[in-house]
Length: 196
Ligand SMILES: C[S@@+](CC[C@H](N)C(=O)[O-])C[C@H]1O[C@@H](n2cnc3c(N)ncnc32)[C@H](O)[C@@H]1O
Image (cartoon, rainbow, N blue to C red; front, side, top):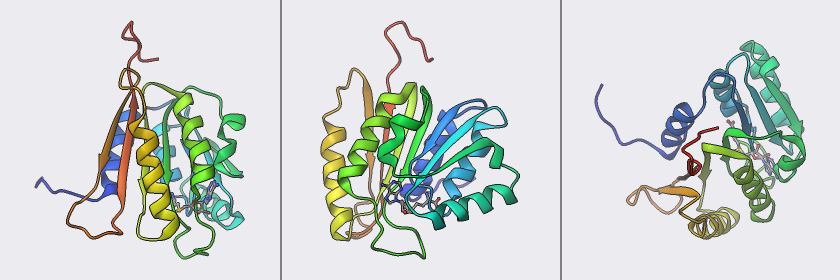
């Protein structure tokens, strides 16, 4: 197959595919229309569990319908709740957590993720990651809240101790100011080399 440089979403999917195995617990922090939730349900398999969050009832309904259509509803816990509540709802450790920031495609642009709650959720997800687990975040600068989220996120993740986490930031330098960017954080192995 030809080698192609692809979008931020492509890197996100690749990291998740590599990090998640059947039986794993994973988080979709921004359910939206359920594309990522379905993708995670497939990776986590019959014995795995996906904990998915969104503040909009419409997003939960769209996701429920998508999972039902694909026979995957039994693999997911869907919460109509902000991702800032992850720590209360998700039993760790988790193999992966995914954030696709911004607003619901085709929905109200006023209901967007905001840095204050994104920060709480990202910190909770980091605390729940198992060794070699990944946190994958797609950020969308180009509007005021998206710019603020991206800047603060970059600062928060840059300050993570390298003994505990590896942090990757991908952006296409010639794609214009609003192009999506991807952050991938992987928790290091334990000192003994354990992965679980
Ligand atoms: C870009 S969309 C997600 C797309 C989704 N991953 C998909 O596969 O279709 C961002 C979503 O984040 C949701 N959102 C906004 N604030 C939130 C919060 N505090 N907690 C959880 N979700 C939130 C929005 O309602 C919106 O549906």
